[in-house]
Length: 129
Image 1: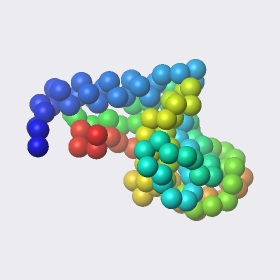
Image 2 (image 1 turned 90 degrees about the vertical axis):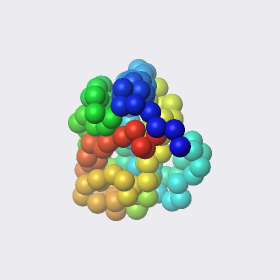
Image 3 (image 1 turned 135 degrees about the vertical axis):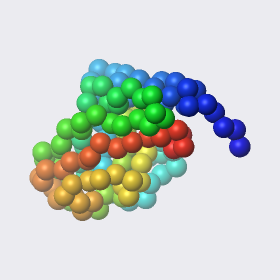
């Protein structure tokens, strides 16, 4: 397996971070139910949607991207169990899918229509890509 230098990993991660900031608005994270599809596959039901900061990630120098603050969804769209999430840029273009188990969703992965839902800032490291 190839092993890249920390410098190359940081360059790659920072380039990926910049992609989250493309578009007419900030990136969003849709919280969905059902089976997570293969990369970029069809959405299931969007239970809630939170909004990333206009600058989604802080610049990294330690091979770890940490998301900046993520705005809550103050009015969840549907009841259901969140099993995965889809991140889209500010133009709605698919960027990544994440299993719900890799996120901290408050109050829980059981979403209640009309409730406030939050997602804690998450990380992406060189090993995730």
